[in-house]
Length: 350
Picture 1 (cartoon, rainbow, N blue to C red):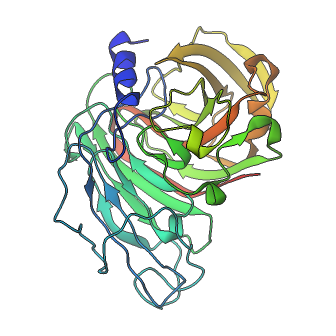
Picture 2: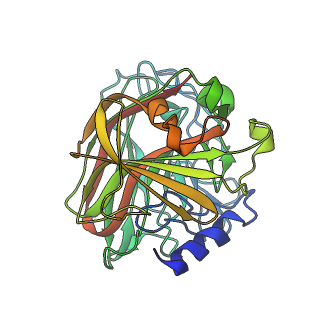
Picture 3: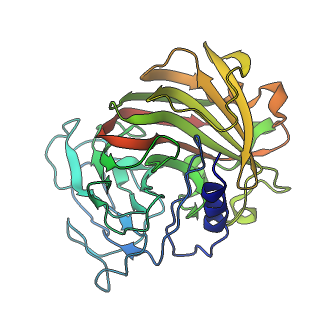
């Protein structure tokens, strides 16, 4: 546990974040948070005749200033900030040609604390969270990380990758690029709740199931869900702001390499059997939130309809009266270089 890291996370979460993209994310051996300055908007809104794609937005933030008045749109059209979009069901984002799974959408994005959001990604967006550096452009060895989006041609299912090169040891998380559903500590609820299903009282949830197939690298990393829960008296987007400090963080480690361990690791943990697998549960705290980490016994690179709700309802966590506000899915990178790819990901909340 690193005091320096956790104090940085507290600073990040309490910044004024109306238009600021900062890099608070998941917590591994230490909490991966970051700070950024004024966000720059890169992207825009593109109306096309193919595939039902109605808007393309890529907000890129961090310490970068705004880029050109109305923003830069690589596909043409006017700049706007999307809060969702209509997933493509045929064609692609640039015309009416048949959709080909795996086709890259737009250009790769390497701006720190930036987001990638396309109609095909609704209701998710991907956050390029290189929290351990204030460098705006993550393009140099040691502080290098980008996000590339791909079309799956399946509404509600997304694909993306990150290629990275991070210097340092395995005692600290350097970055947590991730797909976001619901609340984020830099954006609040960016996408409308009618699309995400969040926030929602845990007691009112009937199903939370996520499927994820990914290809990790050999770097020191974990691949994990990062869930945020809050004890809000009113479980609504209006009652929970970007600066809200969640009461609980629940991490679900599916894969790890390089000998990394979660917050609260004590060598033993508590045995939990849920969601068709065996887990070790470790408990700790970071930045004002209780942290509960489920570490899968026997790593995997693919899960189908993982029953997230079963883990949330683990009795020892005491979460039944609280509110689920966010589900993130990404990789905590400690050091090394490589490419991590989400081949396919979907998550539904009911």
